[in-house]
Image 1 (spheres, rainbow, N blue to C red):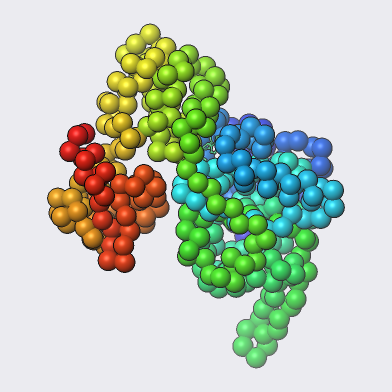
Image 2: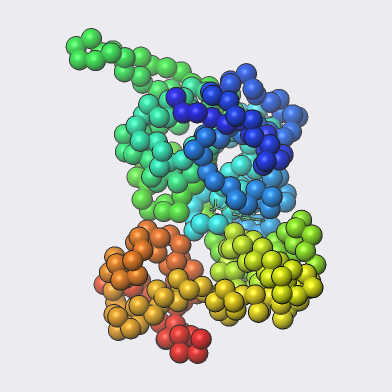
Length: 358
Ligand code: ADP
């Protein structure tokens, strides 16, 4: 059984370590904040202070937001478990934030697991048997679950039951165990890697897209207030412009600019301070960082602009292909700096021009 930590989600610092999950530690509906149960080896959260804890604090993604609100509202009125939800999209766009806000809105408990650590059905069993009625089990990186775990999950998602095999060899028997009706929320950067049967068991599938600069500027202004940073609107807009459409990156840039302002200026973040801080980190006018530019340069110089397979680029850069596919390419594709053809990745004229100028 995995070790769990109970987290009172109001304060991300407020950890209460226990050796095992205590099923009695449930909260009633109006008992806010909801308790999250997080495996001891769970999701690192270095953004705790800035992560919205309630859904109305989330900025942007209005279509997804409205659909989720309707699902929550209908669920509460019917007093049934919420249908299973799958969030997909590049890292840092709010999949975890949506997933952890939903149980808080419902006033139910939430367990958090990571697909990478679910290597065998037995790893999943404690989560399923601990799931309280209408509670949420959030599985991050659900595409990394082993096939056997995935198959074990099907009847749990469909009929809230699991088949347990007890004993071995000729003495083995299968016990059918009934679970409490609960909700799985899955998050993935690679929806394409999920098998069709697993994908089909999610009643809602929500794709999170990159944020427009106006939404990111709002996030930056709100978070600057939380961090007590004095920032000018044009500085917030500039950081937003250079944040690759991604709230997590916007938060990181804001933190760096704040440090720079304190160390190299009078603490106030003006447009000039923000630009100098980002220049020092080699973040260019499109928001590309060293790794993004190296990726483009390798394709240009080593592979004559492409087409080239991602493995070859990754090998030349000495990084994992998954890092490029998950973290680097989505924004470059979205910005029309690269295209993907059947023969591999190719730079666009826009990328070649950008590299020439910056
Ligand atoms: P993902 O799970 O998709 O990798 P997260 O949910 O962890 O991304 O988001 C990263 C951080 O970005 C959060 O901690 C939060 O501070 C910020 N963030 C993400 N989405 C939003 C949003 N819609 N509004 C405000 N902040 C957001």
